[in-house]
Image 1 (tube, rainbow, N blue to C red):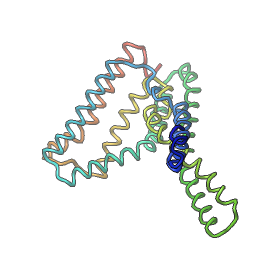
Image 2: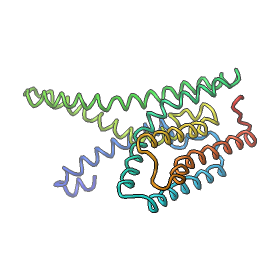
Image 3: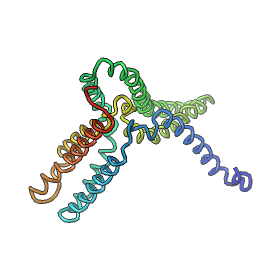
Image 4: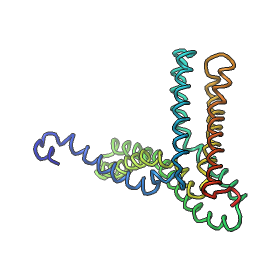
Length: 261
């Protein structure tokens, strides 16, 4: 506002920045209200978090070492493509995997536990529908903007530019919403982490094997000798599974969380 008052000639830059800030702040507030950034664990165990970080950094270091020792320039670009692909497919893959894991937990739970899980499950379902609706709204709004723009260029009706603006504003708001909501939504499993305390660990184990299979199908084996290739493919998901089993053991022995509660 000071820049706009002191330097009116910068209005063409200042006003869009102000409008973008308002949109981003509003979308961020709604995204974090729907998907709390720290809602991915009902039970926060510092030891488990520490081990998970060590495993993640070790995996990243081993991947980098593998590329340095055996990789070619095309392997580096392929690794970057796989990383971007993983980012793109994580939300839809999570939407498909979470119901399967939840159905397993719901199947083995006692009647009392099922009664407690039902309202949390409905809340998670509503959160997933909100995210899917936001994703669906992006192409629909984009198509509507293009149609209105074509009609505006072919017609002198003064109402169409205002209609185009009315569609453009929510389009950018939804983009900001998805930018702030995707990370927390993925970490919380679309708020399904509140259904059962063991769900985040189980869902992590399922997703890591799915990612390993997808990477193997789309990108093939990593570079290196056959033994190194096999170890590179299996070591990551196997180590995650080992940490998940240890986490489930700690949940059972220290916090009384069991799958057949």
